[in-house]
Length: 154
Image (cartoon, rainbow, N blue to C red; front, top):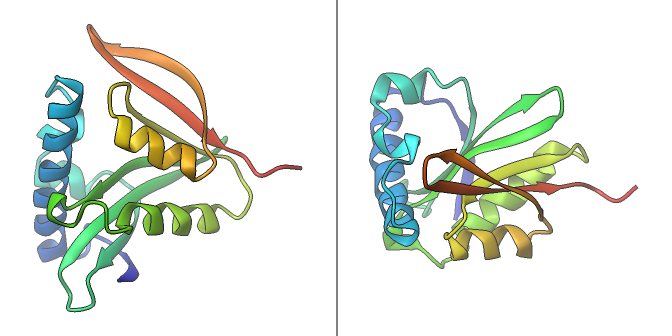
């Protein structure tokens, strides 16, 4: 697996691939949590390209995109806006590798993430990477997310 900094705002073909990947990944989460109102599941190409995120893309060595993570730096740290893995490549370490790379990118500043409360695989991934759950929020009626933070000791 290779990880690359990429910009879907500057690469239309990548943006199309990321949109398809994002929809496939969030469709799995929608089934897990029993709710398809995940905003990124319904995002269009223009919104993805205009999201203002920094991106790291994983490929399988032959150029096939297997996962991606998009984040933004805020006044409070680095916020992981989305972490998506191609369902055909789930449980191959792509999510862990992308998350480890983001934590390295953060260089000790707090990293935050949110996921569906009923998304047990994502919650395990984040806990295994050292994230601590901090809150549960109802973002839409009946749609609950868990917030988590990774803070370097010190």
